Every structure is written in structure tokens, then in C-alpha cells.
Length: 324
Image (cartoon, rainbow, N blue to C red; front, side, top):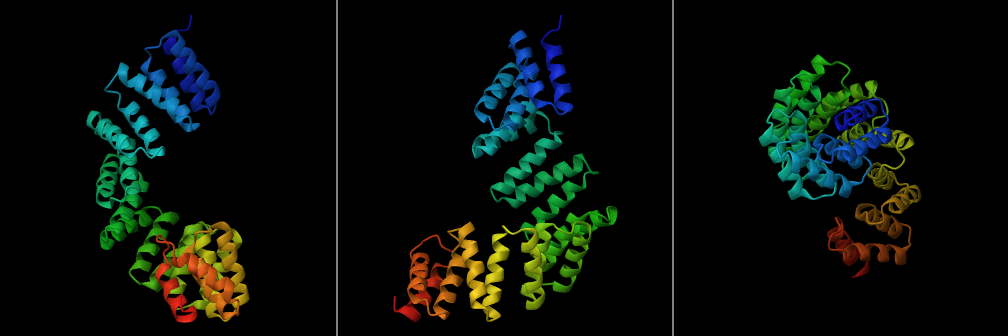
């Protein structure tokens, strides 16, 4: 006769073989046989989290922890559930507890790092990524994430050094090249940034972030024709990229193509009605085309929005052109 442990083990096998529904059935059966099976509670909670059923998942993590408060995996999983629900204090507490219990839990360090990225604490994120990297030196992803955190701290040389090491070890690692290109773009090393981003695109040709940062290289270095060509290429592959479409609209204004600029900027606002940058330049374009009423309405709405990025620019334009 199967006992609770057997049902739990069978559930783990079903999960590993890609059958989460069957796995959940076995975990429920394990708990019916023994409600004190903490591992089954944790495993069931994990699968419930993956299905977005966080309230029930947290109940099972709580049950697992009431049975074994030293279960670092249950603390980690519960922290993840709280993080997805934006319950940041609870997530922090459970990640901290997981690492107090088991400082060698690499995945807990990874999630702790992601927590600090989310709350915009790059120094703490860097420390957590460094712990993960030291525990698993062969995982190059940790080196890249550490480099990104260092770049957010403006420790560019250290970040580039890490990324170069990854690129040397893994010549086909597009992400390392992309991140080096992004850092060099920030440092205004446009030629080197372009070369690295092009290398990354040779490995993964349709990567959206790489394509967009190559556009930014051309825009920042005054290569408007190349920027236009690259923005068109990007939008053919990723038509929903709002930043790229806005940049294209603004660029078309400088090219003396107000009708096409207006079309692109209207498309942006269909996707993101609160985009004040697109709204501002649409208002400016409408003004140039003699559509003064619509221009004034759009710019006035931005000027009155306290959160709008282009509030001040809209106010200045209205005062200058419409005496508002």
C-alpha cells in the first residue's frame, strides 16, 4: 500500500516529466494520507504558485513551515509568492530567513538579488549576485547579472571586466556582448558599442533589446540615416516597441516628414495613451501642420498632468505659441 511519502515522490517524478496536473493530484493525495507531510505541502504550493494561485500556495507554504520552520526551500518559495504579489516586506523576510537557515542556497541568493533589483538597490543586488557567483562559479549568468548591477552603480570598468571574461569563455554568449555594448553606449564610446551590439546580433539577430540599443547608438552619435534604417528594422520584428516607434516619429520630424511622424506618434498613443513624449511631439507636429485646436488640446492635457515627463516642455510650448 502506498503511503504519503510514496505519493509525494511520484508527484515529484510527474512534475519532472512535465505533467504538473498529475503531480498536483499526487501531492493532494499525499496530504490526504498524511496532512503533516511538509514536503508535499511545499511541492503543492510551488505548483499552485506557477498557476497563479498564490493565496492557496501561501497557505501550503505556511503549513510546510509550521511542520518544519527550518525548511529553507519553503521560505524561498513563499518569498517568491509574496514578491509576485508585490508584498515586498514579506518577500524580504522570507528570503532573509531562507539564507539564515542555508547560506549556500544559490537560488535564494538569486531571488534576493532580483528583489533588490526590483526595489532599485543595486549595491545590495550586487552583493547577492556575488554570493550566487561564488557558490556557482560556472554559472556565467550570475557574472552577467553582477555586471549589470555594477553598471547600475556606475562601476563600469569592473562591470566590463566581468563581461569580457564571460565573452572570452563563451564566444557565442550574445548577452555578454549586448551588455558591454550598452555600457559603452552610456560611456559615449559609440564605435565600440556599435561593434559589440552588431556581434550580439550576429548570434541572436532578432533580439529586441540589442536592436533598440543599436538604434540609440546611431541616434546618440548623430548617424540619423542609420538610426532610421535600424528603427524600421526593429519595428518590422517588434512592432509593439513603444520607445522605438516614438523615436522614429521624432526622427521623422527632423527629416521633414510631419505626416509620417504624426502617423507613428498616433500609433504610439493607441498603445500607450499616457505617453507624454509621444503626445508632446504629436502636438508639436500638429501645430506645424496647422491643426492648432487639436495640438493645443493634447499639449494642455500634458501640461496639466503632474506626472507627465514632458509637462514642462508642453507648458513652454503653449505659452510661446498659444499664450496659455
